[in-house]
Image (cartoon, rainbow, N blue to C red; front, side):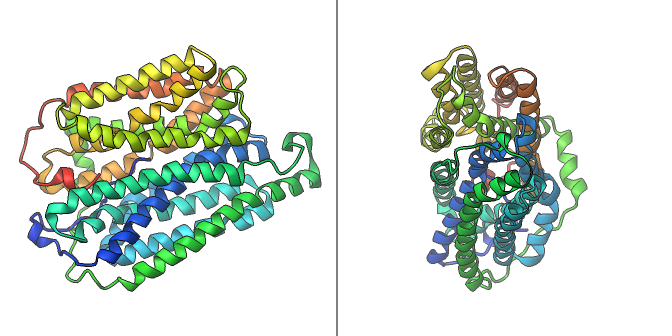
Length: 440
């Protein structure tokens, strides 16, 4: 899952302005943050088919889970960055973790009331906490060691994020998508339907209660380190400062591609269980199809290592264009075939996704100089593409089919491929030392 770049950064442009903290134990808990919120985000892909059955939703209605989750990036991103600047990294991380806990606990009343809007509220609150923690995570880990090893620490942390997106869906499929009853919501009505929804959603509640407990432990540990970053400073900027960057063609195009990339990645992940369950694809049961989500996100984990090696010899722009073209090819194969080929070619799109987010981000923000923090804030908001593209995919799938609707993410990847070609040459302007290492 794509990681939001930290919108709150140190004020100073020189490495010496950023305090370095010798707290190796804290590194491990920051890695745990990456693992947890990466896994929580990918867990949506397992929950969607469950809620779709419980509330007899069409594809568009089911996609509202992703809308309310990812719209938090647009609503909370910039105010959240200001909050982190006011509280500081450590207290900001705790605020995010506590908010995530509140979101997890909201699944209790959501299950008891058996109302779909209550589940959506829980997802929005949960996502609000995720956004706050993501704003903190990357710049925080850059402080926890010498500058020369910042890139390796961030890369290592991103591996934990990908590990979470690989493990959580598999475990979630076992715990949540296992059938507890021999009937479906479509066969019930009245009090029987409400009771069925409450009973079946209890598996969701139990999963998120476990996550709430884990988040409480991590929040407690981070709180113990709340005063370790003495002398922390942040540059104060306005929304206009960030929006002005959209006038730069390279940055504006790149921000749009972040929007489209996250939207396409999330759209495919959101409906891949339903797609694999189709008789003409793999015809799997809900739980077995849910387990295969791990291959989609696991491809991104493997692709990070492959991509990092390729980027040493091939320009980032051409590499981006190449993987975007690969994603389009795999989608075309899946939509026009059946059986194993159709199913696994769509799962393989995850491999193509692996290097897209960090590459788009670095190309868009190249040589922004002191405006890097503003650019990061706008990119953070652009992740809201995960709220817009999946519902559009759902509408198209309702009107046609899941296979035909794949034309939408394919179109997103086509625009991204164009950006790779557009940005294949170095950007003009003042150099921004270390920007590639500062974030994703």
